[in-house]
Length: 343
Image 1 (cartoon, rainbow, N blue to C red):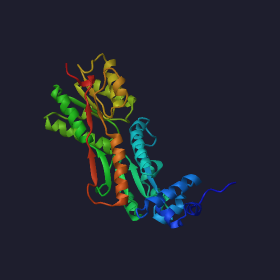
Image 2 (cartoon, one colour; image 1 turned 120 degrees about the horizontal axis):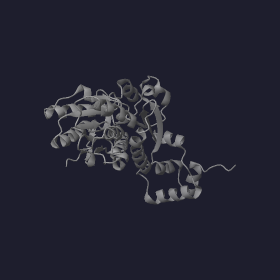
Image 3 (tube, rainbow, N blue to C red; image 1 turned 90 degrees about the horizontal axis):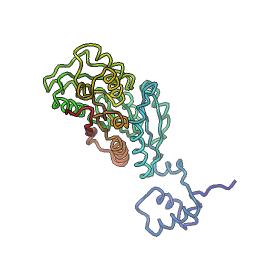
Image 4 (cartoon, rainbow, N blue to C red; image 1 turned 60 degrees about the horizontal axis):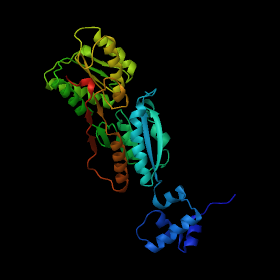
């Protein structure tokens, strides 16, 4: 079996020292253009692939960033539609920056366990960590990462003290805008069908709903506030409960598009019209919002932007740590469609 080319082989062919080859591979500036070109030609000719372990001895880095995806247990299928654009944008950015992306997936319960991080990072195997979560990232996790001197960025959530770099969405502001849109259309009785209230995404949406109703002088009906599991079936069943007693809501704000689709089905089965009798709005702007009839008013999250920005911030933190702008809250886009348009 033919052995692969070594750093020594590249140095010999290029007529330079091994140290010079290392400087070229690791992007040091103090190498002449002529020498750099000579080393790069040798690398191509020998099909040399730098050994990651050897390179880490030179640079003190592994060249690896880990993405930890924290999910429900069991995972809700709709979660994938949220996660995939984020993961893709992270991968695309890091690939362009010559970083290797390592992905770990776990349940929220597993992530909370004190042994989780030591089990995955028992040695310095990564340079930085991205955490994609809908739940609060607890203090012991942040402390563990700091103790190991591993820079990290949280996507979609934050830690209790806002010590970590985090990229979030303005869930609260988005729901406030939806309620304002419905209020401007004359709605007075509002219902809310949410997903898991212990998730920060939903918590922000609940706060936006309550504060908007208060601002417009509208009552919050306890009977018309219910929580499900993000599914179509959940929206259908909880909307049936709303319709079983008077008064019926004239507008229903749903935690995601799938809940909204279930609610719309329950409404139409009762012979009611959308939006003439009851307006419905969702969240996430998934494909179902465009194919359901009537088309669904919803909220578009900046998912790809969040993933790329998180990767950019982490790479910048690896190069030059900064205490500034620890938290970024990205605005969301309200997409008005037929399910809430007034005649």
